[in-house]
Amino acid sequence: MKGLFVVLFIFVIVSPSLCARAIRLHDGSPSSFNVVDFGALGDGQTDDSQAFLKAWQAACGAAEDTATLVIPQGKTFLLQPVIFQGPCKPAINVQHGGSIVAPGDSNDWKWPANSNKRGWIQFADINGLTVSGGGQFDGQGASWWKSAGVAFRPSALQFIGCKNLRLSSLTHMNSPRNHIGIVTCSGSDISNLTIRAPMNSPNTDGFDISGSSNILLHDCDIQTGDDCIAINSGSSFINITGVSCGPGHGISVGSLGTPGAFATAEEIHVKNCTFTRTENGVRIKTRPGGSGFARKITFEDIILVGAGNPVIIDQEYVQLEGVTGVKVSEVSYRNVRGTASGLNVVILKCDKDLGCSKITMDSINIASEKRGTPFATCTKADGTCTSCSPTVPCLTNQ
Ligand SMILES: *[C@@H]1O[C@H](CO)[C@@H](O)[C@H](O)[C@H]1NC(C)=O
Ligand SMILES: *[C@@H]1O[C@H](CO)[C@@H](O)[C@H](O)[C@H]1NC(C)=O
Ligand SMILES: *[C@@H]1O[C@H](CO)[C@@H](O)[C@H](O)[C@H]1NC(C)=O
Image 1 (cartoon, rainbow, N blue to C red):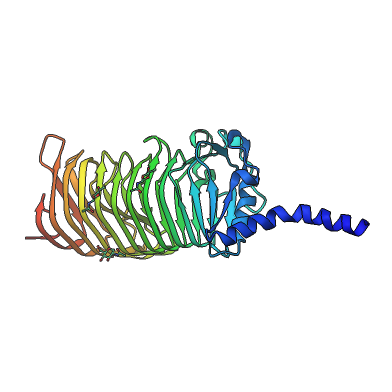
Image 2 (cartoon, rainbow, N blue to C red):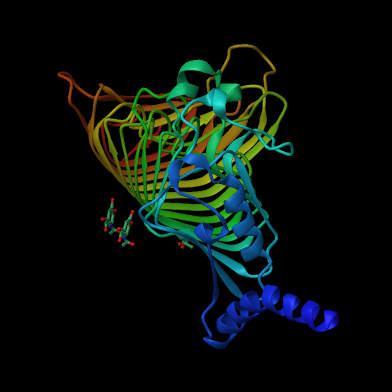
């Protein structure tokens, strides 16, 4: 009798999950894990981090080929800093239709013990992660911008060591620092994102890409207080198309070359992008004291609307002898047109020892909103300029 009771008791506890499991397996749909079923309230006040982590662990450990983590529409989830750690058995599809907010005051952030404090929401070491669904991430950066120095401000989202990442149809706003960090990832498709932060908010880059390769970033609308996209060291085969940038500081390769470090960037292709009232347009920036290269970079079909420094290579060269630098070569600009806010519309400021080589310009037509004649300045660059207005002094104009 007592034995039967124990058996019944165990059956009652175990059977609902057995049934749920059976349904998942038998209806043929991928398994789905809703954060609300794991205790998330979504009232915008209660910390839902633990519920999200439990849902993540369930999805990440699911036996199927694909698991979906559902963040439902119509709710606002308050999250403390969290790490969604892989590797996972299935490919994970995060279906984010709701709103995720950070604590409103930087003093209220609670870092997990194992955190490097670099990012609010970190996804690490995941192969086959998709995040999409029309949802929103709000980093509530205002109190960070006022109170903390840049060294202490975290990124909003960071994807670290991810393979085959797909990110689409989301809105990101008011990060304490950069909105989306792509760090040591390979193979990503990023599209249809809207990024918004006030134009005077400090260091609020849209994207920072570093140590990553084979990244396609397209059809994004970015208005921030710093670079719309910064491509940093160790990046290669990065294609950016259909990005509308501004206000913001433009699209930048670099800064590359912290003193003593070897920095590289190559096969970076920026095409069909618009810069509206940005501080810079397309920029390559290196610092003295490092070494390495930035090469095989193309900027094509670029539209400028009152942009500052539309075309700029800035090697911040110093006059001291023997200071090393990052070599810039094989950079081409084709079909760059529109208006600049100032008169110095092309600036090629290259290292006095290394110079910039194989610079190709073709069909450049940049007018100025200012009265006067637009002009280009150039130090230590060589290459050609075909159909350029204005002409560029140290290139061969044809
Ligand atoms: C882009 O994202 C928005 C949500 O942010 C969505 O409503 C829209 O359908 C998406 N467009 C495409 C082409 O996916
Ligand atoms: C990246 O852009 C380059 C130059 O436009 C192009 O040749 C290459 O096919 C692109 N790669 C992908 C994967 O779209
Ligand atoms: C260029 O980018 C815009 C978005 O900024 C997009 O609507 C348009 O279709 C793109 N054109 C081409 C030829 O890809």
